[in-house]
Image (cartoon, rainbow, N blue to C red):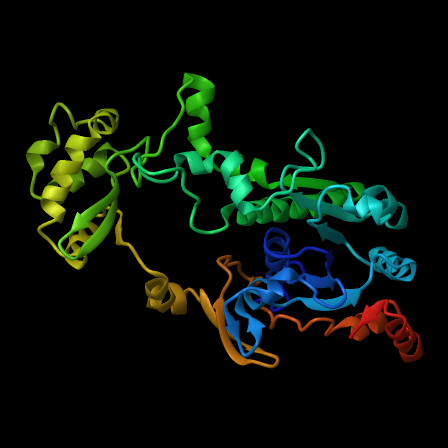
Length: 401
């Protein structure tokens, strides 16, 4: 029987983050069943509330990344606001922040301070360059982390400038790594009874994701260059022109090469002296590409995919966002497009969770919050404040709802 509450049910997260890296991390925690309380600044809240595209005045960007969370508004610069936050820390498991390093210390909310209030607290920070080192105070966005993490230098075509990966991959990777670290810290706390300090840098996350390209320099002192869709270590593993578009084909080993040659009606290429090992195919990739495109350019994408899949060769059409969002297997059966009812908007389609876990569940657990929607609820249910106390705090500008 499925656990509808999720494996992180009972874990309370105080989310001080905004835009993407931090909210992506806490989105995963919320999908896994944690209670995520998003603490936003008075007046405007998370910057991404103003990101396009909009639906009935609300940001679809914000809705997608902040689904299933609660929102409270507290002025952390006010001593009474800080006091409220520290009381919440007493009753929380995790704090996540992605301010510029040093900001939490200036607010009097450093890890050392929070640890005194709650020794079991797990305190996670995401920043551009980390909490220490000479680059610590540099401002950073995804673009900066992609540039200095190395990934832009290997993305694009030989004749083009260094290219940004299409999505904000530095933010996404940092959010993923931070989520993994939080889960590890929760497990460690079961043994030690103590919390942990987590420090994740976006630039570190990008570098770590560059896999063997780092090793090309570290081992061979070779600087990797941009090679388009080709893969440096396996071939054919590339995009190829078809009669009516483009297709990607991945031949991952020598046995697969044999099947590929048979699939395209060229069995004589199996033992060709320039192609009979992966190492040779990588070295002679231009020649291999000519052979492959001699076959693909005479056929439609659908025929290529059908033929190669029949021979157990990984291949695929190159989908647009429309294609992937309307694909029966991906969008519907795998539930990667789900529908929620968003307050003030109505029915909205957003991206589902890629994590499928049984008998527990990882799923979208509700809509995104309106700014300050849960302030009163959280202060009453968690801190036990009375209506009169809450109203006074509102009148003083310390909270908003």
